[in-house]
Image (cartoon, rainbow, N blue to C red; front, top):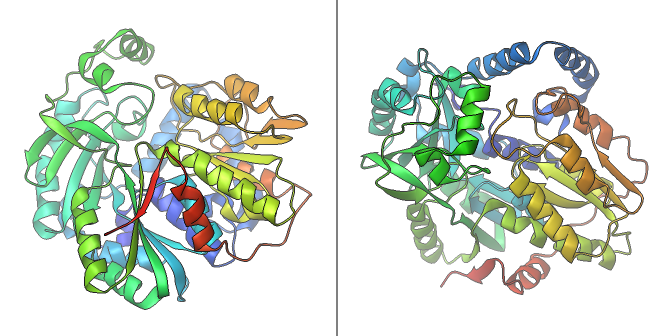
Amino acid sequence: MKASKAVASFDSATGMLRALSRFLAGRDTPALGALPAVFELPLSGALGALNRLPIAARERVYAASGWAEAIPRHHVGDVRSEALAAWVTGHYPRRRYPVIFIGSANGALVHLAAALDAAWLPQTLLLPVRRRGVAPDDPRGDLAAVRESGRALLAANPDLVLHHMHDPNQDRLMIAGMTYFRVKWRRLPLAYRRFIRDRLSPGGLLVIADCTLRWPTTRIDDRYVFQFGALGDATPEEYHQGGPRVADLLARYGAPVRRWDPPAADGESPEAEWGLDPALLDDICAYAEQHRLDAHLLRFDTPQRLSPAVADLHRAWYAERGLPTGRLLVESFLLLEPWWTLRTGSVPYWTVFGTEASRAGLDSYLDASAPYDEIRILLFNHGTDSIGLAHAQDWQHTAARARKIGVLTGVDATAYPRDFAGFVRSHRELTKIRTRYPLPLPLAAADAVTALTARDDIVWRPVR
């Protein structure tokens, strides 16, 4: 099976890979990088028409679009990890890079890499697998339906670990017709080794991005874990034990239960989407030592922890270049625009999702920062009123902290979180910002190392 047909285009790692590789090729990211900019206007109109449909109809369209990307269960065993790795490295322009990041997916890391003219190789990819007849609120049924497909995948790929994820809170529309198989490399695939050998500049840095976030899991096989729930506002305890917020969500969606009944967790594992499997860390360190590479570790406990550091780094960089430092661009999940961020002199602050926890992190950053004149906020629409979702009006309240301009960019507040035209409208709105600057020369890696090493909320250190 072709890797391009097996990997989800709607996933964080895929979206971040597209945004960064397009930036490094001198391009922006219209329509999430899936289509040329010429299609944005008609696509925006077509998707905007969906906003006039009843909520249930919009949700069905969203779910169907994801299902169309999923691979049939009987083809899961045909996926090959080396083909996946070659698909990743094939995104990048064929040239040298002063820094190569490997590891956890992270939107702030994408901006750091763009500033450094660096590439990033993800550890984790999402393989969506089609299945029918399982309700979103039946995690045991989901596991039973695709367990053998997971085993077939692992039998064909001994270098992968499978994190079978089921989240009926944030992903309930998608998982109505598919299963989320997140795969992580335990060791550097051959395509990654070749990329490092051929594309890392002499004396360049190899940096391991290590998000240490963990989540309760159920061990199915040696390299197979089942994760119920995921990072958001609902806690692991709510997923496994229930509570008022869970009961309210299930009642709103007409579920026949008021709490979930997942397989009992028997341990913890790196979080399926964001966490780094330590086995890969060990293999990268051994590879770096063998080839005498300058390897560093960038470690943070949650995905959004890196966002203030990268924002502050950009603000200081702009000041050194004599540019204004009062324009903030807040991004969400895979809504990323590194090219327009630098062209408009915007300070990037990435949020994981549109949750209250993500908004609280942004507010904390603003509390500790010098005021911004302009704040533009992009909101990712995931199609469901999940637990802890911050409403568009709440995000507008945060945007209003700007001294001059505070707006939700490309957002139809009345349709959020089902404003699917926002996926293309956000890029179009960014292109309308009038004040622009030439793209800068890359930030020196030594300057980034100095700035990030000085922080006490993340770790950046050489690998010894």
